[in-house]
Amino acid sequence: MIIRKVDKAILEKEPYQLWNAFVDLLTTEEYDNLDEIQRIAYLAFWYDAEVNNGGHLQYFENRGTSHLADTINALKTLGAAAQAEILKEAGNLFLKKKRRPIKSVFAFVRAAKEGEFDEVDDKYYECEPSVQDLLEAYLEKNKDHFVEIV
Image 1 (cartoon, rainbow, N blue to C red):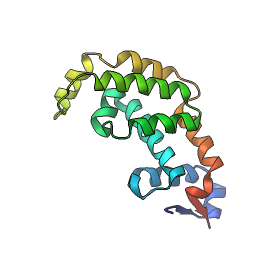
Image 2: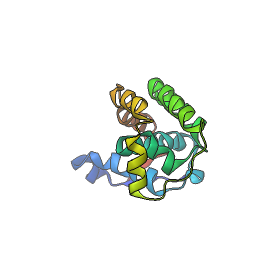
Image 3: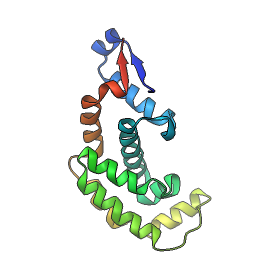
Image 4: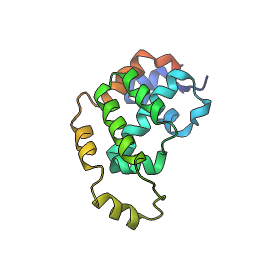
């Protein structure tokens, strides 16, 4: 199992280092190298990060749809049932038409301005608790799958 080591003395002074180690693992390791508990966090983290940065259009452009069902299930596992339903709705929107990859920032901005995902984006941004809040709780519950305190 891939985990990060965090020094206990540093963690006592800087408790945010636990979250930093968690994020480091999720952003630098490959999905296929993670265990099932880590994969849930990985899928939810990347979904949340992409949508918060550029909406569902960005999520699908950067992440595709190969893990769509797994991400919906990961969100449900975290307790993000509303976000899971939103992703399901956004996925249906994305998959209902043939698409070509967006190859430039200009093309992305043009596509985003069309507003195809505005409604699902707005629903997502209004959800409480946030996926980040739920990921923090998930980390606390499953800390030993992400970090070793040394």
